[in-house]
Length: 307
Image 1 (tube, one colour):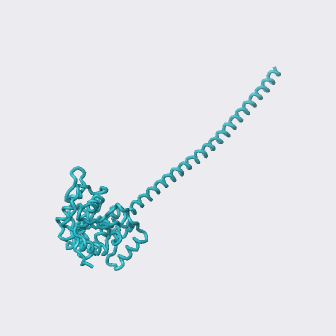
Image 2 (cartoon, rainbow, N blue to C red; image 1 turned 60 degrees about the horizontal axis):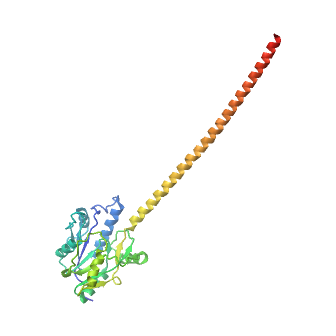
Image 3 (spheres, rainbow, N blue to C red; image 1 turned 90 degrees about the horizontal axis):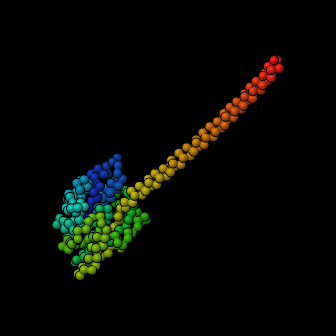
């Protein structure tokens, strides 16, 4: 086995991460909390690898967050070097060039900030670099729901996470690539694709597949790259959404039933009340009128008989 290479991992931080995103009692935004959690887990997993160095690009808040756990001897965070003038979104062409200028190692790895790696990645990179000169090593990831802060002091952290990936993880589709390993001197020349767009990774991979004297390597079968899912937040939002709908309908039907119940109750109450009221009123009125006219008739007859 070739000796482990010196590798620089470079990544783009999510813009909603803040310095206090993981502080106790500060979970005001679950999406922000989860992004920060995954970022810390991923970067610290890269630090566990031999001869690794980290370059992160992000805004000031995200860089402060990464600086809180990234030793200066093992990496640094820089402001995003270039933004599209109209959309204010980072561009991959500039990011690849800037990473190559800042890195001092022979190998670079462009990777998403929510992917955890293990030593099998370094072994695969060493093997690939020993056989090929200009190459691009890529691989599919395993999507895992893991909303926990990894304790890297625990010697079993790898076993626990890998076991969770084997039991509950799902291999991502073949068109999704989250890491690209290459030699610095062959840093890919990219068009000005915007970060967050689609198919730029397939474009880069196609360049190596179709290019002469270039080699593309699929390391999926030998590298377990674990992508920490964001679905927990989306699932929570979905659950809350349906609960909101459920209680809305419950409240609607409850109030409707309450309204109809009292409507019919008062309707029948007033109906019977007025029915009996008018019944007794008319009964009393007709009775009174009858007896009044009867009395008047009798009195009148008696009066005329006297006369």
